[in-house]
Amino acid sequence: MSGRGKKEGGKGQNREGLSRRQLIGGAAVAAAVVAIPGNRAEAAPAAAAPASAPGADRWVKLRCAFKDVVMDGRKMRLRAYNGQIPGPPIEVRPGETLRIRVENALPPYDSTGWSGDHNVPHRLDSTNLHIHGMDVRPHLFEPLGTSDPLSRMIAIRSGEQKDYVFEVPSNHPPGLYWYHPHHHGSTVVQAVSGMAGAIIVRGAIDEVPEIKAARDIPLVMQDIGLFQSEEDPNLWTYLPKQNAIWQTFGGNVTMYDPATGKTNPTSLRGGFTTGDYALRYYLLNGVPFFRETHNPAVPQSPVPAQMKPPRIRMNPGEVVRFRMLNATSDNLMPIVVEGHVMQLIALDGVNFAAPRAIPINGNGDGNGQVLLASANRAEFLIKAVSKPGVYRIVQLPQTQQFLDSAQKTICEIEVVGKPMDMALPTALPVSPRNYPLIDPSEVKRIRTFQFGGAFPGVVNPYVGIDFLINNMQYQETAVPTVVNRGDVEEWHLVVEGVHHGGTEGHPFHVHVNSFEVISVGGNPLPPGTIQDTIWIPQDTIVVIRMKFQQWLGKSVFHCHILPHEDTGMMQNFLIVDAGADTHHAAAMHPAVPSGHGGHGR
Image (cartoon, rainbow, N blue to C red; front, side):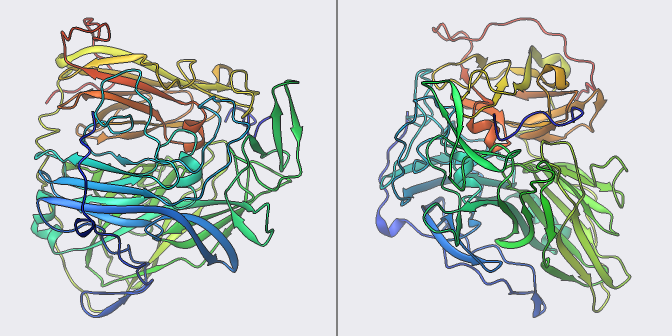
């Protein structure tokens, strides 16, 4: 048994000490109503005050701890950075050094009974830090930037702290990035309890006159997964006992017994889940806008409940820059801004050469105006229409995952007040780190990675379901993929049909370097579509190209459905110098780039 299965029908660290006066913690949680230019009330929840200080070095302290709140009339025990959900936003500029101290104040967790298999959730009190999407040195393994294939993942235990130092390249793309925990085995429990925050890299695009004139509004979306506490049924939290697994289909909790090879029922209220939760909320900048509850009658369709959405006021003809982050653990979000053309300017922190005008309601393919898988970001401009009224920012319904995802109103735009006629930009400064674009002739190697699994689980009986890449579970000290620094590679990302373990789509994410998306299902994407995370639909091949720039070391790529990642759908890769005297040097093979939408500079 497992919490999920097939969907019917196949649907070397520099340990530099930081003095106490150099460290700056986050400010207090911001109020839900903040002042905006023109002395109008901005009813959208505000992002918290930045945790970073100005200067050539940015000093940040992030303290991880439980946070007790009351939400929707329920007592909850969540996890937070600096007592804030989302965590405090961090700002940095290209060429600066970002120094982050992570302090772990989470209480000790009892992992007695853990088998030692890293693909079984464990040590929920251990954490580390990933700054997602930024082109910085590898930072998941000890010591930071290591090239040792046998290195172990960083684990900051309860009561410990660790200093991270990131040199931000001088040509780093300005845009929206984010941070979250990435300790294998505890990632999703911490992230789906509130531990995530935005990073904004400032740069040339912010000086474009039409963009500089626009209000800049972050929209950080998170999910909070909850079960009743084992100690207090009136307290909702996510703190599963070691080896306890929530069964979506049965609505109960089981444990695997290795002595008998059987999965046995328990009287526990909650367990680790790869499916739904007893209760889940969706938050915008820390304020709930949607609720789901477990549905015993139709387990793969949680009972939806729209809550009162936040509201943003805009004058007719006003232009606003929205930065949208899908920081949910497991929800694909096709986004539409009702009644408005979306001027899409960036994906995953990398802006285009010019805005892309996405028509009202998108292209009619169900993907909305922009499709955001978990971890994706979109930056777009909206010029308010002339007709006063209330227009929603909506996630369209989708059934591309194990769980059906109902339509959600994320927030509302109220167009009201004195008309304006703000201008939209026609050209944007591109990042020299990503331009000129890769020419197909530069591709030196083509690789294929297939995302799949098995239900019931064969190699992961504790969880009850297998999540695999190229038919392999994650191994901490294995390095199946070795690439050369400076090389360009083309990767084919595959999710096959239900008979080949492809029961749903998967969002692919790679650390260290972004990639250009060449095609999805054989359909070419516009040149310059540069991302770090891409949704791979079921029965689809996605073709990407990337250049391994600047950094050496051991890192990972994985599915960014966090329960999948935590239970095995991840692999290590190693970036080495070509010709290095090591048996890990990448083999060089001539490659013929895919015909799926190839393009030149």
